[in-house]
Amino acid sequence: MALRPKLVLASASPRRLALLEQAGITPDTLYPSEIDETPHPREAPRSLAARLAKEKAKAVREVLLANPDLAGASVLAADTVVSLGRRILPKATSMDMAAECMKLLSGRTHRVYTAVALINGRGSMRQRLVDTRVRFKRLSSDDIEMYVASGEWRGKAGGYAIQGIAGSFVVRLIGSYTNVVGLPLAETVGLLAGEGHDVRTGWLLGHST
Picture 1 (cartoon, one colour):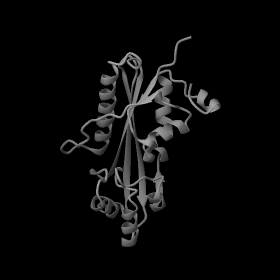
Picture 2: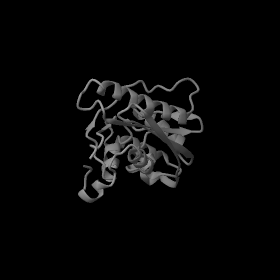
Picture 3: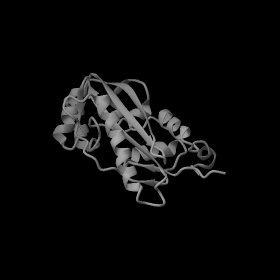
Picture 4: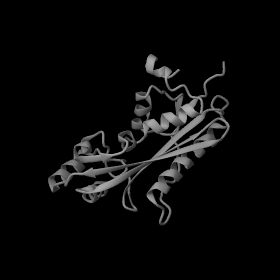
């Protein structure tokens, strides 16, 4: 019987790991990628997400090729981009940045793109891009002030995590909820299954084997 391929998650995101484990899949190891995530001039939001996911997967695979235990592993990477039209919202790193994101999102519909890239042990890559539309309620100045004071926005694309406080701002969502969290599960599990990963045994055992 052929051995199952090993799986490396190219991310330090606890949300992405938790989503995979929710689906019964446990990566063999985590290996966060370190790439420049600055958008190119006039780069579209969906193009940015696709490019960064691809670059993350490639960067980690290059490192793993020097590791005999992981040289043949599959590498799974993802990137999430929040946008208003063609305007890409940043990953908030300051209170002012978080407040500006909330002001922009207040009472409006925005889009969340998550691109997923999977490189198999032979070096072939497959990708998926998922688009979800999210509408926030109109936020008061007190809503924004107290949310920013919570600190929950730190490092989050668009300044929020839908599974946290900001979930109470959402009045409408069209598309994949897990995409907004950071990893569209249906598409990700489909990619893994297509490359020979056992995505069902963990449903019975509580973890992948």
